[in-house]
Amino acid sequence: MRQLARVLGGPASDGGDLIIDITGMSACDDAGLQALVALTKRARLAEGDVILVAPAANIRETLSKAVEAGELRVEDDMVSVQPTP
Image (tube, rainbow, N blue to C red):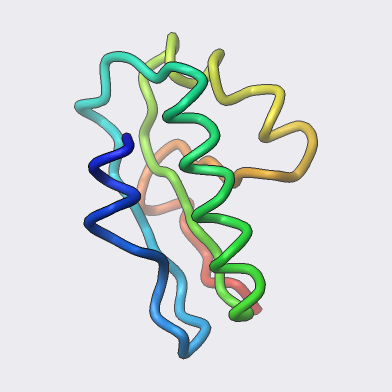
């Protein structure tokens, strides 16, 4: 996840949403969770969002507290993704 944060550097400044398909993600530690939350905060400051799509059950569990707190947005599949108004 640190590599992801470095590569992305943050969402585009135009306020667009960043949709990340995490189907293949098999693990997410605290550093990864913090990177996703920080990336989401930057996106929201630019009037966009980060949408994590199709997590495995174990990843959904790891992300659940941040989702409940409104810090992350997770969708079951691409069909469920609606752009940020």
